[in-house]
Amino acid sequence: MIIESYKTLYQQLICRFSPPQVDWVNKALQELSDHDDPQNKLLELSAVARRKLRDAELSNEQLVIKVNETLMPFNHWSYAEAGRNLLILKVATLSDVNVEDLVKQYISQADEWEITAIIRLLFALESGEPLKYFALDVGRTNNKQLFSALLEYNPFPQAFYTDHEFNQLVLKALFLELPISTISGLKQRANQELSQMCEDYIRERLAADRSIPVEVWLALAPYTSDYGEELMFKYLSNGDSEHRYNVIAALLQQSPLSNKRKQRILAQQLHEKNEAILAFISRMDNN
Image (cartoon, rainbow, N blue to C red; front, top):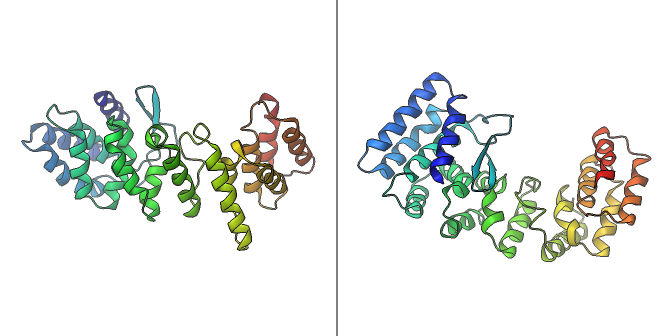
């Protein structure tokens, strides 16, 4: 329920905000409760939230909101995003508020910082399909800040996107040179079309003598062709340790691990110098 997400977020923020920030947030929440038109009041409060709070990341510790049975991380939100989303959740808990209308009105008058915040929150608003339009619309932008809000640890695409929509999200992230390891459900939503799209993308990059994103292997591996697998084996010995690390991570997605993959990884272990990669390989027997 939205009220539970609101309570969890409030409790986590109050112990991290400074006393002046706590005072402002509590006053703002009370104003929303008392106002005849809380949705318009929300817009007014949201406009000053970034000045009242701050842009620093909330915490290095894992912080989550439990939405039904899904854990939604929010420690990567900024203080201002978290504060804005607390206000949005507050309005969403009011009995006469339609969540879809709330999101539509908020986004229509929001700047990119405010849109970033509410896109991170979509899943916790528990309205699913009716909110997908807003997520897909943000997915069309080349604005990395907005697109990252949809990409980073956001359960909404995993839960509500079709395979085609999800695949396009992954490919767009690669095109924008954003990390795909932060995409919620990347392993669970892997499919043959996505692997083929990644393979085609790699071919195009190689043909143009351009670099390959270091995390592309995570989306390629699950349903890759023989050509794609040989590419991964080739990049196991690449000079860039990030390529090697992500290739191994991708290969280890297979369970049980094929003998061919295991032997190639063990061969790389003999001359690997990177400690993080060696530690990763040492976990292989648990796969």
